[in-house]
Amino acid sequence: MSTFTQILYQIVYCTKYRSPSLKEENRTELYKYIWGILKNKHCVLYQIGGIEDHLHIVTHLHASVALADLVKDIKLSSAEFIKNQYLFPDFNGWQEGYAAFTYSMNAKENLISYVKNQEDHHRKKTFTEELKGLLQEHRITFDEKYLL
Image (cartoon, rainbow, N blue to C red; front, side, top):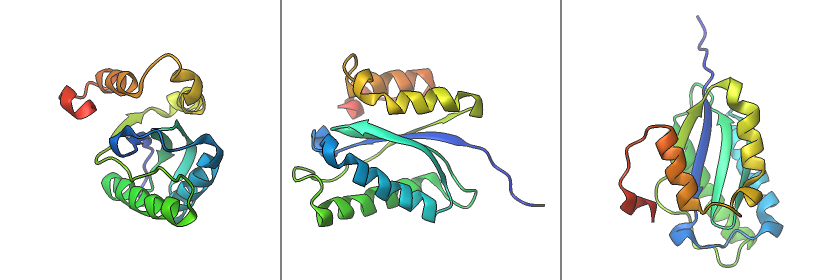
């Protein structure tokens, strides 16, 4: 028998100290680079987006890929890429940790739309409000001191 999976993830992580360093003009280059990492690991990227201080990635993981390892690889490799390419002069690395949420494939289109519209979304909500809402929606227990 082969291995069959269908796990749709939304992965969210932010810049160190939530520094607003991911300026819009170079985000596309960062997104292409992250897409390459996912592609090399045989993961499917459905959408990537974000604003100055955080990113959202909507992906399906290949059965051989562990989520924690993938996020670690993306963060380490993309931080090096950003510094080597001088994409974001004020970028000082990624904050420790991440959030990841699973979804039904029925939610894929809405999730893609949500990530595409991060700029509009964050005119109404801060990152902390967004993350707190996602954690509550997915019934994840958290300590608010880690949301700062």
